[in-house]
Image (cartoon, rainbow, N blue to C red; front, side, top):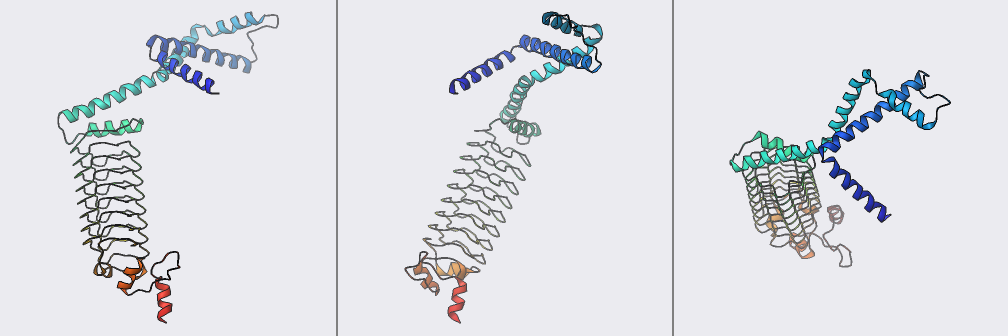
Length: 350
């Protein structure tokens, strides 16, 4: 089985090499067109019940008669059209290669001329992505890419610092280790994007869609994520110091070990958020919804911060913090060893 696979791969590589030769493509197109004409001719004869071969003819004679029946003056036009169409299909790989080469030329020329706004560059980048070409290590700092559609693109290690990517469609894109410092990503679609270890410091992400995006170990220091949709996002060990997250939706997000010193989380939805081992020194939680949020092991968090939020009684804390908040503590034998749910608290009060 392995040997058969190896032979198949070698034959495929050999065929690709031959298809790069012009005369081979032309010859192959003529052969294919001829056999197509022969097939159509045979079908037509069978439908009209006018067989070319006679019963007394040998197999070789029958083959010659069938082959020669196609070579007629009234078939030249049809044959030429078929040959041209076949040649066009065979040259698709060559055309694709030329298109990719020209697209990269447009991108390189725009970069060399230090042009910020280039619609030709936007079109070239979209074409490359549609062809499945990797855009890894793309270097277009400060480029105007407003509204560009690069869904699913490989932009790992790319330099997009200070680029204008407002309303850009980067759904499912790979932006790991990318430089996006100071980039404008307002209203951008980054749903399910991979942004691990990316640099998004001071980036503008207001109203961006980051649902289920992976932002673990990402540098978001000083970024503006006001009103962003971060439902189910992974922000574990991310640097969110001084970040603006007011009115952001972080429902079900994972923020374990994240740095949130001085972060503004006012009016944010933090329902079901995992904040275990996170750092929240001077973080603003005013009117944030803390329902079912997990604050176990959180560092540098004070009572005033928690009590400024909404539904703080429904969150989960370490037993010692529960006592400071005046909340009942479960038995030490409890597997969770956290504050009793608010429903149970009401029952105790009655």
